[in-house]
Length: 258
Image: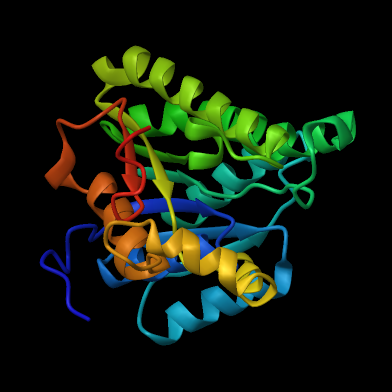
């Protein structure tokens, strides 16, 4: 796979949360391929170390830190680690989030809601605040947050998750408006991509899964690196310097009506 702007992120120091597997790992691969220096973080210590080692072997400059985003000190520790290794922060990708398995609205508990909120909008909020002064010091930068069609359109079984994802979109819009004068861009990506969770869904309900894919105009599930990662690379780079406060679906056309 080749990319048009293979050095578009050369020298940029970027933090990627939830990068041990799934969408986050695909993003990390794309950013590394495009020259970024990466601080990877995940609650799964072995997975994020494995991601670091994979990319380091390929010649990328990558560090990692295991962190639980429910820890009130996690945001500062993550940003401090990036500063220690790279001396600056140019980009932040808030991908990580934890949820309980889907269940009917009336069955979801306050603990379910708290888990989604603490690892989603609260963690995103704290990481954005922690990164902000360093993005200013770098002369500006880019933040990419993550939403979901489960929030923007609604999805049965995902009340806590959908609410948390829409809260992230609200945070994004406010930050984009306030931080624009600082040359900091903030956008949201809403993906449909082939992660471990999606593979489990396909195996558990192949008929239902096929029906969802058939409803996608491009008739396929996105790739975490080539589709989602490529978009995130664009949003972090200098080719998107007039793009902020946007919600961008990378979902094969399935988000067009939302």
